[in-house]
Length: 88
Image (tube, rainbow, N blue to C red; front, side, top):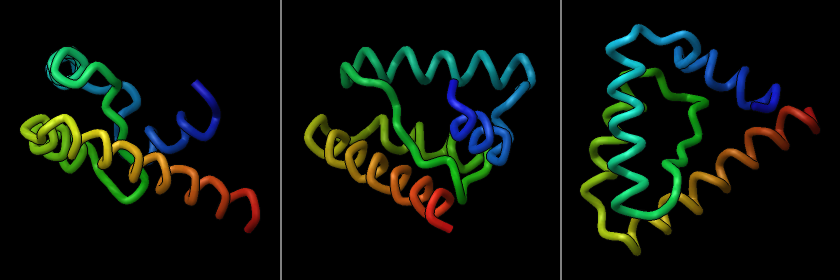
């Protein structure tokens, strides 16, 4: 993982989750990957662990086209957050 990703995940409370949380995240990831064929993407900045898990579950009900658009939007947010940090 990159330093940016590690810092972002730390800020969201995703580093060193409890075992039950780790298992839940792994299950959600597997189900999401199976349903959509791509990794779950979320700009974790401005989210906490509970919010991320809620988004994971909510977005799992999206249709494929909606979810692809949401992932692309999230990539845009991530890029913007990181550019803001780099450019001050």
